[in-house]
Length: 484
Ligand code: ADP
Ligand code: MG
Image (cartoon, rainbow, N blue to C red; front, side, top):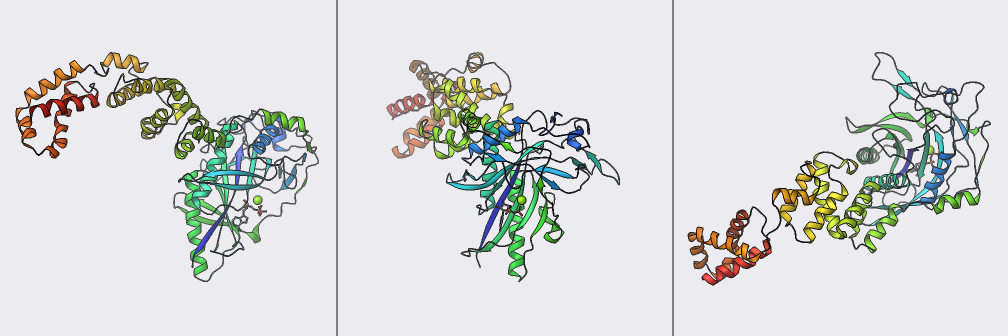
């Protein structure tokens, strides 16, 4: 039996407002526990929430970026439940009239193909506090700093068919929210987390299978691993004649498995009702138009421009537009060296390799975009050859000079293109290698091509790597063939 995987994601994005969604308390990360939750965040008697306009603007920007309908009216509802990290007894969320309606996100797969994923809606809500299980023996600590932090929950349709598609979707969302500047997208700090809904069905069957929901997965890699495990578990269960039960599961990255948390029977009845403390949000057309007119260039548009105007391959365009930092860095290198393809090669080759090795993000690159652009310009105008360029890159990386030109000068890496100088080195090498010259002369003409490598190596060494390799090759061939 062939099985098909069906996945829908609920992504929680922490919005980058300075204060909470309904209060003036700070949202800064990493403060001392319980120093940033005010009476409104705790829902103490006698206080009233006031909606943060910045959170509304951010949600609408996201909606516009995914070409969603923006309803004129949206409403906040109370989702009632008790938990130690939610002392007010309800979470303020949007159940029936969310701020963002149906839209669409385009994902790019590894082979460069694209696929549209429908977004059912996105709604605003407040985050809860955090339970701290590790720091206290036999007790649980509660930190309410996060209570009231604005979240945008983006709910997809069940349109994804593999773990790779789900990861690509999450990356697309990450890239849209960071381009828009509405979230820092820092997954390690919990700024983006998702609930993964997974089911399987026999290939060709229309009806969906029963799904399990895996809660709070917080990295691209974990999304893929959690789905891989879950799909296998469900298929095995069904093939053994069992049934998948609708339930909430937890992914354990240490053991690489998902475990049951609660089944549908144990699920809460949240008794949603419109929050009597908050007015419905009414957006007029001028407000929405103003936000639309001020949207930045988005990842899909940038990718298309990199491909169509700069002539990059679909793959390069997609990698280089994946994050705003990456795109900005690449564009500055390109503007300085004036060659998009060379800029793309260097950013994805030498630079990406070095960043990977030292586990650095491009924002923390020791080599600035300007420095790299100037280096690439020196390769393009033939001041240095490819080998010397790598040396200059290393020197820039290690902070051994402020610019490519300084390093080229200081280390004498300028490419030797003067024919006379190269010929003098060739003469010396030939004079020093009588045995190899004799071998070359005695070899069949079609074997000589391979033997020339030895002489090229010697000349390059004599020039300390600075001779122009094409010229060395050509001149050597002429000189050696003249000896035969
Ligand atoms: P609920 O009301 O229980 O939250 P929803 O219908 O809102 O359920 O769906 C929640 C998420 O689950 C959505 O992202 C949706 O795409 C996904 N989903 C729904 N049914 C399935 C299914 N059979 N398999 C996989 N994902 C599903
Ligand atoms: Mg839901």
